[in-house]
Structure formats: C-alpha cells, structure tokens
Image 1 (tube, each protein chain N blue to C red):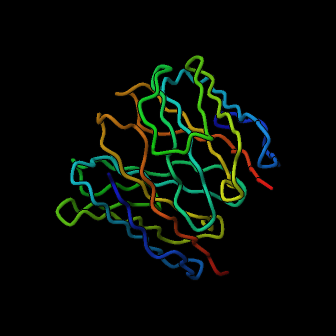
Image 2: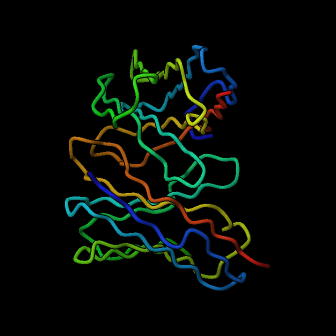
Length: 114
Length: 114
C-alpha cells in the first residue's frame, strides 16, 4: 500500500445519477491530483490541487466537479455522466516541492456509466 | 501544452533479453521525466526518473537516458524477467512550473516471453 486510498473501488451508475469518488492520503503530501485512465489512451490529468487550492483544470467537462476540503482529502463529484466517461479514475498525491516529485497513486475507482 | 509520444505500444521480448521503450516530448521547458510501471489491476508506481541536468541514470537492471536536444528519453531494461511484464508509462513535466501534473505517454505493454 502506498498510503493513498480510494473509495469506492468499483462504481456503476446511470447517466442521471449523482455520485462521489473519495480519495484520502495521510502521507503529509500537500498536492493531490485526479487522473482518468481509459483503454488505449494515456493517463489524462484532470485536476490538480496544491494546499487545497485548485491550480489546474485540464478542460474537464463541468459534469465532473472536484472538491478538496483539506490537504488529505479529495473528492470527485459526478453528475449527468455519459457512457464515454466510463474509465478508471486514479487519485494521486505528491510531497511538497523540493522534497520529491514522485506521485503516489491510489488503487483507482473503476467507473461504469450505463 | 506538453505532448508526450511513446513507442512501441506493445513490446514482446524473450526472458533475459533487453527491452527499450522510447518517448518524445514537445515542451522544451520540461525538465523532469519519470517512468511508471503498472501491473495488471494495480496502481502505477514510479520505477525511475531523470532530471534534465543529467543524461543517464541507472538503477540495477533499469536505466533511463535523456537527449535534451532531440527531446527524447528512453527506458532500458536489461536481463528481463517475468515480473517485468507490465504496462510502462513515460511522463514529462516542468519542475517548478505553474502546472504540477504529469503529462503521460500512452503506455507500452511489455510482455516477457519465457
């Protein structure tokens, strides 16, 4: 275990549902990230948070809404998703700048939109 | 923004032989290049990284080379073993830049044939 946990691990939702993904780390990291991993595509960066402040939104549709209440928790709120949003959603965290640039990934949430 | 191309998408080698995976990047300001390994059903994990102030870095059977002029970097695995079978991702970023997320290549599925 790398210390980054994600819940749920699997999620099936209809296009009209609202659900949330949760990520948690207790590694003392101050940066947290959401990535989307689809088959045959690279890992796509979605959002970046530094010290609870969003520093990057990589042109993600508004049906994905991130929330970072503190440096240890990150959420991804989902609503009105499309079937093409089915993918593995990976959370990651990294230490403060100057210590290391390694990103520690969680196990991911396998999302299926029906 | 940064664009990372990775080749090949699939690589099959005999156990004991060497494997080489190549990546190119577009943003000349990128100066940090990590490689992640993702085994089936598991999270990506950092295996080696290199910064632009060095041309090569080695860690046991794994080495990475960087050519800043040509904007490409490569992962070399020698004496391959069955446990090396996985998907390998290269990535690039600008250390200290405004965006802290990584831009990943599409991944290479490395298959070690017994």
